[in-house]
Each structure stands twice: as structure tokens, then as C-alpha cells.
Image 1 (tube, chains in turn blue, brown):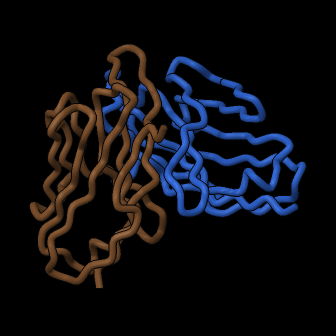
Image 2 (cartoon, each protein chain N blue to C red):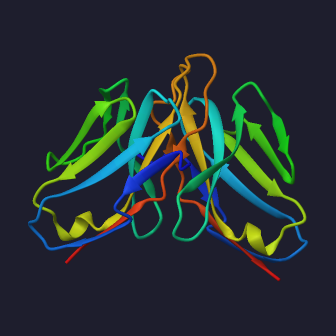
Length: 113
Length: 115
């Protein structure tokens, strides 16, 4: 069964605005990862946050993790047209193994110039 | 150099045919995966291999048979193709570390259309 659920399913913003996407999951995790998928392309890893971390930054990306609520958020600041893509959260199971990354349904972000 | 490469990129075939998708990674990873992405963009894991051994088989029909001749390759053979097999298939790889998890690297995908 599906682990992660992103919301919103679709988000449309203007260039320069911030974009926030949320992810909820059901079972215990070792880590949570965010990926980007441009149309017709493969997934590209953005950032990984471990279950004992609460916040992580990478450039214009900020990820938070609340294990008590089983949720994470991805914030993209000062968005650009090139950020237009689908964004997926993926959870790695507890126990330290990434044999199986379970993905959510994704959020389609459109950044209008 | 492409880290995870899969071929072909597009595959159009008739129902009942048998087809294969090849995947190779040059990252030195020990774990490889096959994912299926449906028309609604939902990604579902199909198989996971670690050091050429099958680790995960997520209730995939027997018509799907992965083969890993070595750690750098994980091919997917599909027998008796059905319309419902139409999807984008992604190969991925990662380095498995018990205490330090790493990200997965994905290929560009193979869009399979069964007519």
C-alpha cells in the first residue's frame, strides 16, 4: 500500500513566490526523501532527512520532519520557472534499510514566469 | 557519463509479445530497483536486488522476470504483454548502508505502450 501522500496534488504560483508541499506517511521510517521529476524524465534526488532530524536546508530548499505527526514539508523559496516539475516524497523503512523506497503520489508544481 | 541508463526509452509493442528492458548503472551501487509509474504518476516498486539477489518482489505477476547478471545490471523481461502493462518503467540504484541511508539514482525511464 502507498506510504506517502503529498498535498496539494497541484500547485500553481508566480515566479519569486515560495512553494510549500506537504507529505504524510503511515508507518515508522528511517528517513524521508524528496525527489523532483521533470516532465518525461527520471526522478532526481533533492534532499534526505533522517528520522532524528527536524529540519534540513539545501540551497533554496527547506525540509521539515515531524515524526509525531508522521509528516514532512518541502519549502522552495524564491521559485523559478525552472522549478516547474512534480515533487515526490519517499520514505525509507525503519531498520536502516533502503531496499524499498515508497513514494507518494506527488505534487505537480507550476511556476509561472 | 550517464549514471543509470536504461534502454530502450520508448517501446511500442502488441499484446501477447515478449519484451525486455535493460538497465545498467556505473555508480558502483550494490542495490538496484525496478519501479512502475502509471498514468496518474504513481510510482510503485516492483523489484529490488542487492548484490544480484532478489530482495523484494512486490506481488508482480509472474510474467515479469527480472534478471541481474552482475551488480551493475538489472534487466526486466516481460512475457505475454497486456494492455495494462502500459506505463513508464524506471530503473534505479542505490548504495545500501545499514546505518547511513543514501538516495536512489534513477534512469530516464522506458515508456512502454502495449497496443
